[in-house]
Length: 60
Picture (spheres, rainbow, N blue to C red):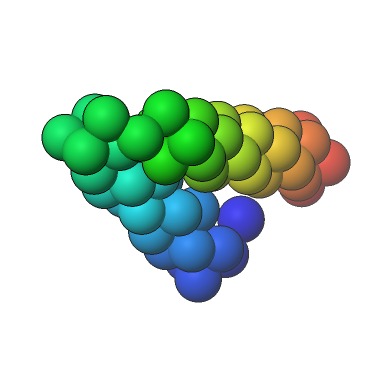
C-alpha cells in the first residue's frame, strides 16, 4: 500500500470517528451509523493493502 493510500484510509477512519461522535452528541443515529461505516471501510482498506504487501514480500 502506498503511503498515500494509507493516509487516505487513516483519514477516512478519523472522519468516521468524528462523525460517529457527532451523532452520539446530537443523538442522530444516522450520523452514528455512517461514521461506523466509514471506520469499517478504512479497516477493510488497510487489511486489503496488508495482504497485498504480504504477497509482494513472498514473491520477492
